[in-house]
Image 1 (cartoon, rainbow, N blue to C red):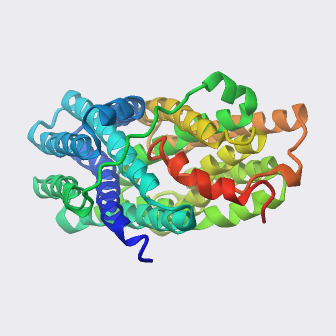
Image 2: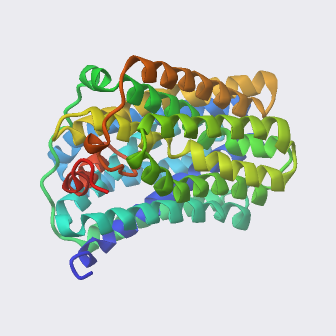
Length: 414
C-alpha cells in the first residue's frame, strides 16, 4: 500500500473531476429543460461536448510536451471552471454549445494528464490494484455527485458554483501532492484503417456503443423529466443505469473469456435491446418500473464497449493493445458525436420514449452485424483469447495504464 500512497492525490483529483463532469452532464439536461431549451438543443450540446472531447484527445499530448503536466492541468481546469460559471451567467443554447465544446476539450485533456501521470507512477506490481481503485473512484464519484442536484436544486446559481468549486479544487492535490513532472507520453499512434481490418466487428461495436451510450448520458435526464419524474427521481434514474453497468461488467467479462466472445456480445446486445424496448412498452411513467428496467438496461448496455474492445484485442498481434484501444476510443467518439443529436431529434418529433426506440434500433443493427461476422469469420480459439480489461472511455492514455496488467496476464490466462 505504501507504493500506492503517492498516487492518492492524483486519484483524489480524478475523483473530483469525474464527479464534476458526471454532475454537469445531468445538470445540463435538467437546467436546459427548465430554461425552455428543446430536446434537440440539449442533444446538440451533447454532440458539441463529444466533438470537443475528440479534439482534446488528439491535441493534449502536444500541450503537455509544450508546458508540462501541472501547467497544462491548471490551464484546462481554469477554463473548465470558468465555462461552468458561464452556463449560469449566459443561459443561451448557442453559448451552452460553445461551453460544452470547450468542456469536452478540457476534460479530455484533464483525464489524459491524470492517467498518464498515474501510468508513469505505478509499478507493474501495483497496476491491477490502481486500476481497480480507479474504476471504483469513477463509479463512486459519478453516481455520488448526481445527488448534489436534489440537495441544492437544478435551478439558481448554487449548483453551478459547486461544480466550479469541484473543478477548481482538483488543482489542489495535483499542485501540492506531487512535485514531480513526468515525461509527457508519446503521441498515440493511430491507424484506424489497420484497426478496422483487424476487427470490423469490434470497431463497429464501439461506434454503435458510442451512439447509444452518449445518447443515454446526454438525454436520459430529459426522458425522465418529460415522463413526470421529480428531480430526485431523475438523478436516481441516471445513477441506477450507470451503477448497473459497473457491477455486471466483470461477470460478463468472465463469461466472454471462456465462451466465444461474439456469442456473449450477441447475448448482451440482445438484452440491451429488449430492455430498451421494455422501457418504451412496459415502464410507462411508473418510477419504480423505470428504475428496475434502467438498471437492467445499464447492466447490458454499458459493458458493450469493453466486450467489443476485448474481441478486437483477440484478433490483434502481440504488443498492439495500446494501438487497438486508442483507435477504438476514437471510433467510440465518432459515434458519440452523432448519437445525442440524432436521438434528441427523434425525441423532438416522437416524444421522450423515442430515446430508447432509437437505442433499440441501433442495437438491432449491431445484432445483424454480429450475426453476419459470425458467418463470415471463424471464432478466436480459447487459447488465443486475451483476458478482458474493463476500459474507461476517459482518454486514449487509459489503454497505456491498463496495458501492462493486461499483457502480463497473457493470452488464455484464466
